[in-house]
Length: 459
Image: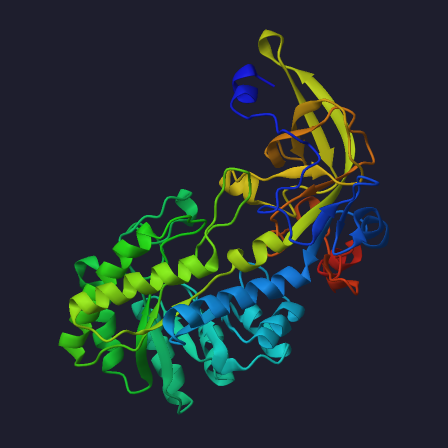
């Protein structure tokens, strides 16, 4: 490792420590054995029973986080809010049942996500459907199922949805997705409110107002409100303040043009979580208070009644609850220029179970979890098994110098987008999701097999 890289990445005080704001709440290292457990389940036993790689999900924390978001917005708004879990973060039948048990709603963006929700028995009127290019088939499925809200994203979609709803003798409630020109401080590919992007109607140039006019004239559609999403992995509500100001101005325009004040304002999601020690996410209670105060102030300034606030946390619920368990396969040190070197630690997964480091240059935290160690720290790059130079799991990690093949590593905060963005690159089966509580460790998504992959090959 180069001296500049190592100098910019400080050696941790204790390689065996698990920072509580990064790791699942139920994760703990035994002072007696040095082995990490999740809700009392030894990672060595989890690896034996479910094999590696595997996503290990703390079900207790997942449910707790749902409850925290629900109660935070209920308290901040005196009940004038709805929380929609963003299913794209991670969705399966068990998660849908947890959402139902804890009493929050669900946001889907494809027919596949909708099918998961319906199969698990989720009430369709509590579902909101996104998507910038929803097909005629997807829109028809949403209407026929009775989805509560559809977020319209283009003029073509307005026409398609109105036709489908009219044929079905249904009045479909919709939100208009607007781009407010606010670019959140995040990666270019996950900042979603600046003008140059595929989502929504721009406030500038009159697109959004024209969308409102068209919907208002269509008897098969009911305009319920506006939708805005300014990005992902955001740690400050400053961007929401600017967005709310522009949305309030637009709500005044809508009132003047259509003669109605829209009852719903969806602020999207995008609040960040801790992937590394330097990340400092805000608590749901503080976020709820700040967002409510922002919207209330802007509405008062514009002479508008306070709308019902909708929010869509996904990563903020699922992300911190899960860690990915890997087994070390090889450790290789290569010589670089000027006498420097880099150590590569290869594990039995990689970009097929977590594409975010390759796609977004995302940083993660990892730790040796099958034992503790008093060895000196070494700076390494944790990589996967795929035939790709960019197959990086953790770009820079301090691990003990006595690390050996067969050791178990865990990467924290992989609950959002790990399994949901997983692929079969190199024909590698996708890992299972193991939900753990004090009472059990059980599969909620089974491991794929090579036979599953071959079954799709029909020639």
